[in-house]
Structures are given as structure tokens and as C-alpha cells.
Amino acid sequence: MAQGAHEAIRPTSLEYEPERVRKLLESVHKKTKGKTYERGEKYDRERDIDDLVKLYTLIWNRFVACQMKPAIYDQTTVDIAAGRLGLRASGQVLKFPGYTQIYTESAEETGEAVEEADKTLPPLEEGQTVKLLEVKPEQHFTQPPPRFTEASLVKELEERGIGRPSTYANILSTIQDRGYVEKKEGRFWPTELGKLVNELLVAAFPDIFDVDFTAKMEEDLDRVEEGAVDWIDLLKRFYKPFKVDLEKAAVQMRDVKREEIPTEHNCEKCGSMMVIKWGRNGSFLACSAYPECKNTKEFIKHPDGKIEIVEEPKTDEKCDVCGAEMVRKRGRFGEFLACSRYPDCKTTRPISLGVDCPKPNCGGFLTEKRSRRGKVFYGCSNYAKTQCDFVLWDRPIPEACPQCKAPFLVKRENRRGIRIRCVSEGCGYVSDTQAEGAPPAESGGEEGAA
Image (cartoon, rainbow, N blue to C red):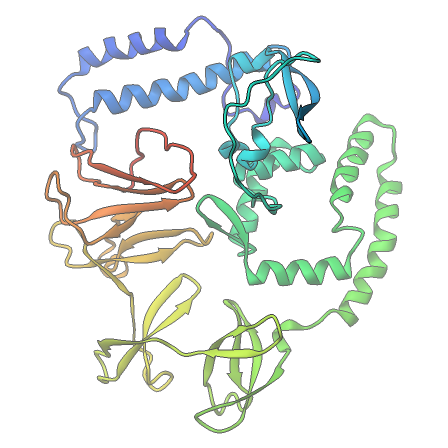
């Protein structure tokens, strides 16, 4: 294979079919029955064997599919005469199934809208009489393209010829590590920082920040490797216009960190004008009399340009040091409680989710955290003090499990619906609430605690 050096898994034989592997795993289970892992967890035959076979089947099917011929479809438009009306359906008719007999990707995996993904028409003959089965009085509006998932973004990069298999993982991690995007329900959403960086760089370097530039550069580098292009000439063709753009950007590009955009709001502490400034967590309102006055506020900018100050929500919590009210603030790693007398008092505290840490003798509580990549997770408030490493990826809720009476459950919400489950070992309680119009959720959960 062309990208053999980048493979994580290299199939070498089709001898071991998935069902044969299942039998081998079951025979091994009989020999290890009653034993435990090194960390003390008991073997769970149903969970372990089913999960292993599912993963192996996915790899086996994908490998077999890549050795098969592609599927063949006829792009078809069907016109149906219905009295005074004419009906038209456009789609595709499957003529040869090819690799789809073994492996297909769902709309969820590819990131396509369900309506776009399902355009297969039944086989029809010209002049054939069709029977009306149902009339659905529905109105559809044009929907924007769905936001990228990791899978659909990699697919887009492949189609545009950007990057290589060895660089895809680095691209996905870089845009998250630098705070350009954040992940919500498995999809990428641009952050305020990401939008700003994109705006500045596209304006300053339009040639480089064109999607075709990277693909063309990949082709040119391949030609250098083949000896068809001199690498020095290639660099000269790139660097001459780039140097001009770089010199212009050094003079003309906005210095966002030093910008102070005036507003109609005044500081309630000293009466000076409030200005919009940029910090590591995005834009905010700050007093123009800084550093003498360090008052800051969060704000919302409406489409008409109006600036609305967002008041810091008060809480019933009191500061342990000075007794003043604690207010909610937003930082790099999520929300937290801070003393309302800041900067005179710099006391901070994590926000409790109403669930105590389940680790024995810990005494902490569970709170929302954010990783360096911007991914939300839930951990113990005592991590900094006692290095308590209890972590959940699903949000804990202060409701007792109706099955095992554990003190809390966890909740995951996405476009399919809501799943509430228990993470206590051996319980297995799950409650699914399907969102209206969503496809059925797949059976089986994933471990939420780490």
C-alpha cells in the first residue's frame, strides 16, 4: 500500500473470520474464568468479548471491502405523472453492490445529513405504473452543511488533497490545542479566537490560505521527490510573493492585543470609559483607566453592533477569606467561583455539580473541567490538593440509581437524544430518551469513568 509506513493496523490474512475469533475468545474465557485484571476488575465476558469482536469485525470488514470493486450506481431522475401534477425524484439506483455488501458508512460517521445520505431509488421501468402508498404533508427548508466531525473533516482533507495520512491526527489535535475550535457533541465549532485568526490571516495571506494552495504544494513536493522540479526554484517561486505579503502584514495587520475599541459604557467603579480588549479567553470589556482600575466585564455583541454587558451571576456562596459574595466567572478551563471583591481578594473555588467524589476518604466533589484541547470532562475538586484522579466524560447528575442505589448517574446528550446510565461496576442501568426524528440509538454503552 502507498501509505504503508503510516498504518496502525496491517491485516495479513483473512483466515480468522469474526465468528471464528469469537469462538477462540470464548475458549480463552473459560480458562481465565474467575481471574482478575491487574487493577482488580473482574472479567466481564459479555462486555469484553462483544466489544473485541465488534472492533475486530469492523477492521476485518473494512480490509475485505478495500480489496473489492467499487459499487456502481445509475444517477437517475424519475418523473411521475399524477393527474394535473408532476412529481420528480432524483437519486441513484444500485446496479452492482461491490464493497457495500461488506462495509458501508452511516451518515453519522461521514458527517452527511441524513436526507443527503439516503438518495437510493428502487429499480423502476419507463412506463411502469406506481402505487401511492402515503402522502406526507411536510415542508423542507434548505439546511446549511453539517459541521465537521473528525471523520468528515479527514474525508474533506482527503478529497481536497490536503495533508497525508501521517498528518491528519496532527491537524485535528493542533486546531483543538490552539483553541481554534471546540468539540460539542462530537462536532467542531469555531471559537472566537479561531474566527479572528482566520479573518486576519486570510486577509494578509490570501494565496497561502486558499484551500488549493496546500494541495498544489503537496503535488509540487512530490515532483521534487521524483526529480522533475528543482527544489530551489520551487522555494523561490513561493518565497518572493510571500516575503512581500509578510512585510505588508507586519505594517498593516491589526495588533489585536493592543487594540482598545471604545464603547458607550462607563466603568461603575471609576467612571472611565469601558473599552473592548482581547485576552487569552477572547474579547472582554475593560476599564480604560487600567492599570489604576482593573474592572472587567463580559459582554454580548448584537448583530446591530450594540454592546450588552453580561452581569456576573451572583451565588449563595460566601468567600472563605473575606466573607463577600462569590460570583461565577469564566476562565481558560471553564467556569469557576471567584470573590466579588477581586482584585482586592483573589479567592477562587470550583463549582460543585451536587455530586460528591465516590472515591473513599476523598471528601471532594465533582466539578466541570476543560482539557487543554477544550474538551469538557468532569473531575474531582481535590485534584490539586490530593491528586484525586477520578474522571468522567459524561455529566454526573445528583440522582440515585434506581437499580443499585448508587448516589449518582451520568448523562450524555446529543442529537440522537439523552442517555442516562449508572457507572457502578456490574450495574448496567441505562435509560434512553430518543430525540424527535432521530434515528434509533445503537445498543451498548461505553465506560464513562477513567
